[in-house]
Image (cartoon, rainbow, N blue to C red; front, side, top):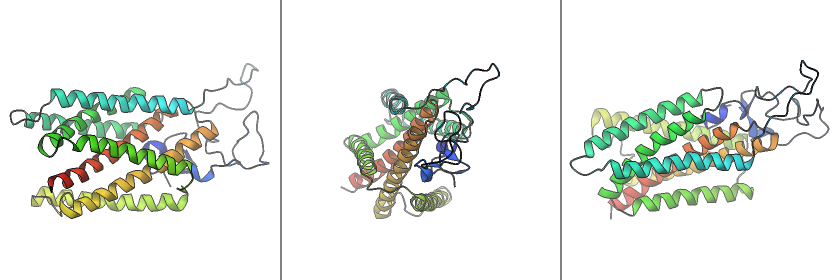
Amino acid sequence: MRSSNPVFSRRGFSRDNGYAGFNAQPQAGGPVVGTNPYAQGTGNPYATNPYAPADTQTGTGQPAPARAVMTIDDVVSRTAMTLGTVVVTAVLSWVLLPVDKDNIGTSYGIAIGAALVAMVLSLIQAFKSKPVPALILSYAAFEGVFLGVISSAVSTYVSAGVVPQAVMGTMAVFAGVLIAYKMRWIRVNRRFFGFVMAAAMGFMLLMAVNLLFAVFGGGDGLGFRSGGLGILFGVIGIILGACFLALDFKQVEDGLTYGAPREESWLAAFGLTLTLVWIYLEMLRVLSILQGND
């Protein structure tokens, strides 16, 4: 099984095509190779990491140089940079791309184009063998343009208070899942992973079917984006986002435990940003429906 987050299925966040989190504790008494206490065969998800230097002598007879490993500070700083880029470009697009009657068509067109570019960039990074900071930050910038225009439109035509509420709601979900994960109220295991993946695939399939009905049949398709069904599926989307966060935290924890390369912190930042954007959009949808019904 691959990780639920495509960026975490890249090197350093998977083990033999499996979910690294399910081998989280090194086995006591396992064989030790060189200076690596978590060598292959001891449950280390990074034992087969192509980034890891060999535990043998170099051709010059000198020990292989120690590689820089990922720390929590690396993850926090990279995540702050990525999310900061999203926020800055969102604010700029909100200001520079008005959604009034004279400019709404142009603004929507730019937003849709930015969303498509962001999607392409995220897919390119997901299939890259190494994290590319410029690619990740570019994704964040285009994603911010899309979020800025959509948020401005919701604030203008639904309610000015929806966007701050959605931001606070997203932060609350993040904090709640983090606390629950640290307190071990959430048990991230293979069963949890399988359930989340099955639910996510079903959710995305229903949304795709709804989109097709909306495109060819007009209106809101099957009604999954408005009314009671819209609220229900929006809440389900937020719950799925919270589950993705738990999986993300587990992947990061394994990276820190087993000494993932420092550059993998960019993938951690990328994955967390993707999940938080998902949660924000679902939160914005639910609040927009609720405010629109008032």
